[in-house]
Image (cartoon, rainbow, N blue to C red):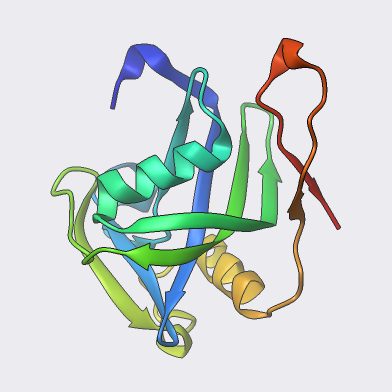
Length: 154
């Protein structure tokens, strides 16, 4: 991680399914140490949340994903966190042996009952699995002054 280019107030995650399994990574530090969580991380300065999600997944799991709809947004007094439902595109799941020490495809129902899967991860899995439409990407050009633009609407 390039700490000088990190926007510590913005982070992303994504829930990815393949064959009724969800991709989870066993975290190696902080409050999530030892827990199976959905991969994600901080947005770099000048990076869109969508690009950050693609980068984080590739770095942490070796998987290429495509961000789809927004399934959740979490705010607190210090930062915001956007959760996407993301589509699996390619790659074999593998640990980065840094931020995680295990990356696994876990049956969705099992993930929702395990004690080593935190509540936030369970809520995100449930939201993504519900197949309700989240906020969908909408074409929007806007002015060129602050491009690129992203607009998600119901």
